[in-house]
Length: 149
Image (cartoon, rainbow, N blue to C red; front, side, top):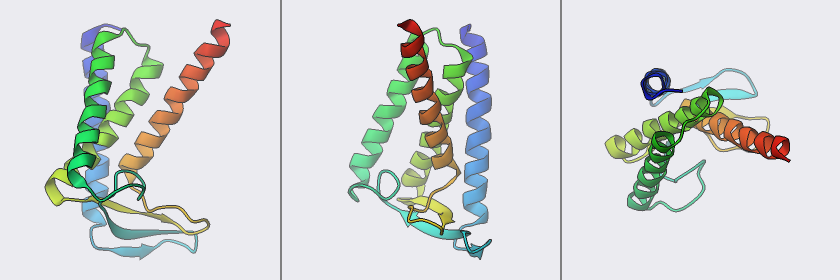
């Protein structure tokens, strides 16, 4: 895919994910809404790196985020990638940017989606995009390894 199309696709995906994530965080800021016994929107401040796992060192977390985002940009710029890999990379990038923006502006990430039928950390739309992106990238890698044999 040529660089202009890559930039256009990336810009669209990043804009949509940033908009949805920041809008939902704004709408649910400081709220607690029970949807059902299994799902609720519960405002939570997350100072940890990922899903509540890790240290509360915000400087280290920001530095790691910036390095990962930089590596994604470098990988996209230096490689001719198929759309099936570009989309998940941009999903991870956009989710990372949105959570990084929270950390820089607020000092924490706004989390609000709480699933009550098993013990799982509270998360947000950006986290969903990151997780789906990573799963799709993993799938693409495993698929290419299997078919290259």
